[in-house]
Length: 104
Image 1 (cartoon, one colour):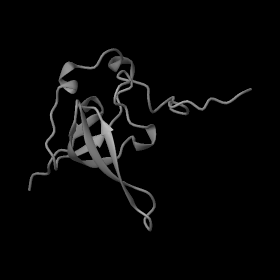
Image 2 (cartoon, one colour):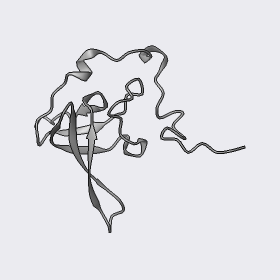
Image 3 (cartoon, rainbow, N blue to C red):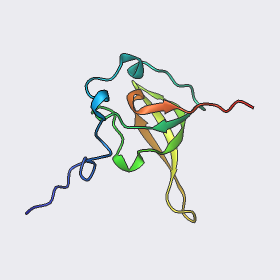
Image 4 (cartoon, one colour):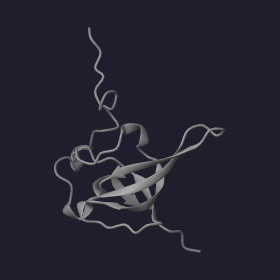
C-alpha cells in the first residue's frame, strides 16, 4: 500500500479537537494582536488551515519579531543543543497563545 507524504501525515491525535471543542473557533482568536517582543506558544488550531505552521513546531515557544500581513513573524530556536538554529515562522494568530507573565 502506498504511503502518504502529505503535510498532515502522522498527526491523527495532534491535529484533532476534543468533542466539545469541535467546529469553528471563536472570532477573538483570529483578531488577537501581539507586540514585538511578546512570548507566544504555538498551538495549532486544526479548524483553520491558513497560516498553519508545520506540525513539528507544535508546542514550541517563540518570540514575536513583527507582523507581515495578517500573520506574525515568530522566532524559535530549533535543533539539538550543540547546533541550535534560529528559525523564523510566519504564523497567523489563530495558532498562537500569549505566554502568561509570572507574578512575583
